[in-house]
Image (cartoon, rainbow, N blue to C red):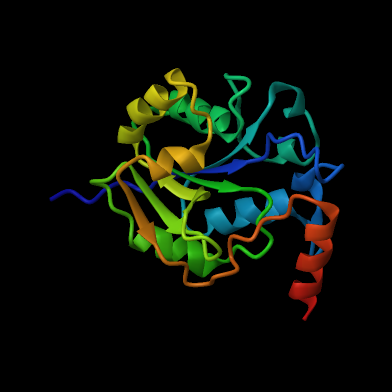
Length: 197
């Protein structure tokens, strides 16, 4: 049987960072932006990695360093970036990560790829907090496009709910803190302290 081709990588950076009050993609960690760090991690495992942006972000200096996929949809949150990537290459699977995961590590990416189930539309991690799917470090197979479109048509825009209501392979995280995200200044302080310790 032919081996499945590698997914393409997508780093979601199109959020408006309202709760943080500044662009989360540009927050620095060890002298490197969160965005650049996420792209670097994916490039260690994948041949092609893109950054998801809103149209008005495409000329921003840090985002402009990387191949971009500009959102073709509005009002859908992270799903806008995922669908736009699927429009860009409808035959590809996409490993999608958020740009605001400061503890994401190479082993978490590797483990997800090693345990990918191409027969299921989604391969995702369980949250180490509540056991629910973590949609922003997930492999979206090309076959998931119709499923996502149906949910959007029904008015569902939450990728986590989509995974809950689908045939999703859920994995335990090898590093339980890897998918802790940073949404507020308080989150940033706690995470920075944890990384320094």
